[in-house]
Length: 106
Image 1: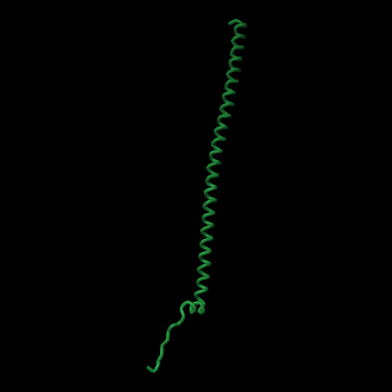
Image 2: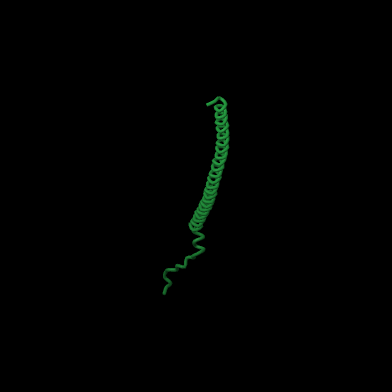
């Protein structure tokens, strides 16, 4: 081959490689952007799932707190009832003694 044809082929190959490299770089950059877009979408989905779980756990905590408060109120009421019923005066006011027994000369 002549030097001119050789340089022409070499120049053509270099131009081809440069254009192919630029096109490949653009594809890589766009695919990298696509990959990062996919990652962002997955992270947003994960964030939404975690936020939903946090809200469910907060609701469960509130419900358990309400149940604990109700149980404490019931226990306090039972204690008050025990105290009131343990007082003899209160029991006698509810059921006065009607027992009358004895000898009436009869």
